[in-house]
Structure formats: structure tokens, C-alpha cells
Length: 525
Length: 111
Image (cartoon, rainbow over all chains, first blue to last red; front, side, top):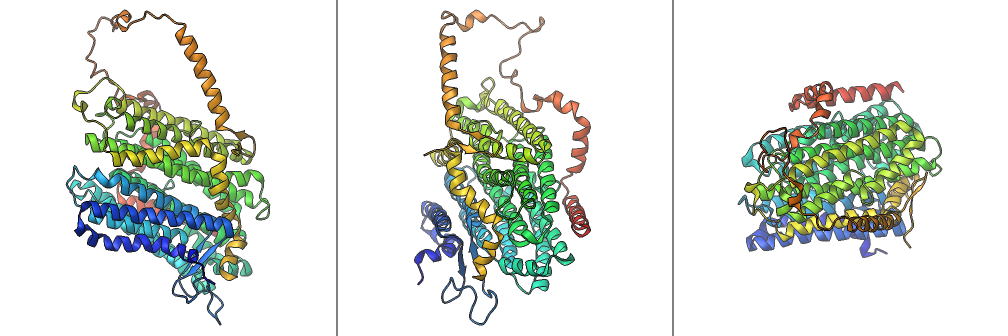
């Protein structure tokens, strides 16, 4: 007996997808209709993802086979494995989808007035934003290796169009071109890895490949595939030393698209974790992979923050911080992977579990406060058309709301209590310490330098004697303030009630990630 | 209903933190109120800059580039290496990627 809610995973993809294709038609009804349409499409997608999340927490993994008479009937009669495109949603997939739908929805709200000054048409923008939302959810929900590649490509292509939105300025075109090449090369290497695994196991469903890998044990071809996938996904996530495209693209895209790009990079992290835990899992020597992820995390957080502090433009500085914060997520989950090998799945040491909680919690926290910071940067650029920190100043007088939003975001990213960044960082600090105190020392040093560099932004942008050129610039329109307010409120709420958030959305994601048998069973049972 | 966040090695309770912050703020306010009430900004006098004339308020703003000059100068060799790494050329990005893939392959196949 099929329940309507069983269709929710596919609806979370189809609603923004169809809304995106219909946007050029709706645009003929007027600007307001188009903006309402796009915002509503993304709001519905977000609502469906929340429903899916609630369902997954309630009854466990949700699956959906496209084109099947009974969509939950994944394996047709007489077959040994799924042959259709399969969606498999567990706590971690739903968690990943939550980030991309939240940020695309807020980007749609922020866009309402953002392009007024440029006089540019926004039909293409909203179409691409909806398609990016759809491909992002599909990226998170797919249970199939080949479709993972397809959705990596699809999300990258839509992102390229959005990065190059200010095409008249020239530099965004260059940034989009770099992103295009990097994404294409990374995705192709990922496809080669998928080809290797398909050749080995005659299957593409992650659960089926994982089960067969458990039976046969891991061989050289599997290791080559793993290296290709880890390298490609680490590059897409912006891990050092594969991060160099990040400041170029985040720095040149519209500010709210930079916010969405952060969650898109986090989807690559999600895929990296999915491959590490659900696909390879117990078949693998997790200590080696775990330490690789830990070292990547350390390099990413340290190099990212050290380069952020010397930046001269506001968005480029924030882009380097986005790199740096990714390091915390890699560190937390990498330590979890190392710890997992110290005990059976489900019996991993407590510090490993809390490190993973911290790493995963930091993903959603980072999406929120970094999104907020990018929106404040967008608000500043919208009102002043200036990006250089040397030329800004005294804006707190003119833009008090933006200044307060910036303080909240900056305090959160620097890990100051009681904001959300602190809650996830303390989980990481204390649990990672159990593995090696040096890791915690680096993580804390990075937080101090992060605070220093945001003090620099605040001082040079908002403080100082009144500058005549900015006199009377005023605050941003209500739609932009609304998007900032939602993120600022979430930053505070996630900081004040961390236990509630960890129990409700983080712990189910962590448990789903470490439960490889459960993930395999989701497809095969 | 709202419990503290258990971190494995301890716990974190933001509500207790906020209550402590509120108490400290009240104490600070009481100390502030006990200060001289007749102070005005005119009483501060003019700044003395070794006999040099005072620069205009607008020009006295410390811009982004001037902040942490000493920090950057002290680590200039590190930053020199970093700048050489970050060329902005896509060919170099791909080279880094190829190098990283080769390293990962060596590690995974070697283990």
C-alpha cells in the first residue's frame, strides 16, 4: 500500500525542476509573478525536504525507484539488483538536502531587489537557481554512483551560469570558466572511478556495490577508484591544496550565489563521506583514509585562514574563510573515521562519535553563518558598489541592520559563544583532543586568526570616521534584510539550543553515516 | 526540556553562559554608574601628535590593508611561498589536482 509521503523524495526534486523550466513562461506574466513563482518553488522544495527528514527519523531509510509501478519496489521480479534510477534517503542525505534547499530559498528572497540597480533581466537567474536547487537535492538523495556523477555535473553546470551572471564585468566569466574546467575534470575522474567499480561489481547502486565489495574484499582497482573519487570530491569541496578555484568563483559570483556555492561544496563533502562510510566502510583500512582526511582538514583550515587575513576585498576574504571552515568538517569526520577502525561500527569510541557530530553539525552551522556573512557582503556591495576593504568605512552609521547581522555572523564563524559556530567547534575541539592534542591546538589557533580577520573587516568596513561618499547610502531593501534576518536568527537559535539541533538533525545524520549495513539493507531488503 | 550539549569530555550550556553574561553586565553597569557623571567629550582635550598637525577625521581611518601589517611582515617568507602557489592560472590548478591524485594513488595502493 503506497502512502503519498513515499513520493516525497522525488517531489523534492521535481518541484524545483519543473518550476525552473516553467520560469521563462511565468516571466511573461510579469516580474513579480516570476519572483513569487521561483521563491514558492524553492519554499515548497524546502518544506518537502523537511517532511522527508521527519519521515526518515521516524521510520528509517526512504527509497524510491523511478518508473516502477510500485516506487518502493526497488528490485524488479527476477532481478538481483535495482535496474532503475534509485533514490535512497537516510538521515545524512536528508541533512545534506536541507542545506541546499535552505540556501537556494533564501537566495531567491535576497534576489528580489538585488539586481534592480544593474537593470539585468533575471529570468535566467531564477531558472538556474531552481535547477540548482533540484540538482542539489538529487545529488543528496541519489543512491546510485552513476547518477551521483550526473548530479555533480548538473549542479556544476547550473552553478557556472550563476557565477557568470555579471558577465559584463568580465572577471566573473573568467571565474566561471575556471570553475567549469575544474568541475569537468573532477567529474570525469569521478566517472572513471565509477567505471572501475562497475567493471568490478556489475552494479551502480551504492548499496549493492558496497555489499559485493564486503564479500570480495578490497582490491587494487577499488583503491584506484577510491583515490580518484577522494581527489575529485576533495577538490570540489575546496580542500587545500585543491582549493584555488574557490576564491576566484566565490569572489566573483553574486553574493547570494556565493552562499549557495558554499552548500554546493558541502554536497561534495557529503559525497566524500558517503563514499568513505557507506560505500567502502568496513571493507577499507579506514585509518589511512581517516588520517588523509584529517591532514587535508588541518591544511585546509590553516592555509585558508592565513590567506584570508591578507585579502583586500571583502568577498575574497570571506571565500578563503569558507575554505578554512571546510577544514573543521574534514577534521571532525576524519577523526570519526579513524576512531571507527578502533571499534566495530556502532561501537566506535565515544570521542569518534562526538567528533563526527561536531564535523556534521559544523556543516549546517557553516551554511548558516557563512551564508549570512556573504549576504552582508552582498548588502554592502549593493549599496556602495565597492569591494575593496581599503575604500570602505563608517557604514555602521548608514547600515545598522547589516552591521548587526555581520557581527552575529562574524562571532559565529570565529567560534565565539553563544553562537552556533562555537557549539560545533567545542564538540570538535574536545573530541579531537582525545586522538591528538595537536589537532585541537591548530583548530583553536585557526579560530583566533579567524576572529582577527573578521575584526579587520568590521573595523575597515563599518567603523571609522564618517566618509562623505557613503553619507546617505542607507539600509538595504526589506527582502534582503529578511533573508539576513532569517540566517541571523538561525545562527542565534542553533547556538542557544545546540543540544536540540544535535539530537534532532545531527545525530540521525551521524548514525546514518556510520550504519553501513543499514544503508546496504535500504536497497537490498 | 533543553539539556546541555555533551561533548564527550565535558558539556556546554549556552543558557548558563548567558545568565553569567547578564550578571557580569549588571556589575559592569553598576561600576559605570558609580563613575564621574559630569564628564563631557570637550574635557578630553586635543590629541598631541609629537607636534604634528592633526590629520582630518576621514584620513585617520585605519583601512583594511594597514591592519595586521606587522603580522604579515613577520611572516613575509610564508606569504611569499603562498603567493607563488596561488598563480590564478587554471593550468596550475589542474597540475595541483594531478599531483594530489598521484599522491593519493601512491598512498592507497601502497597500503
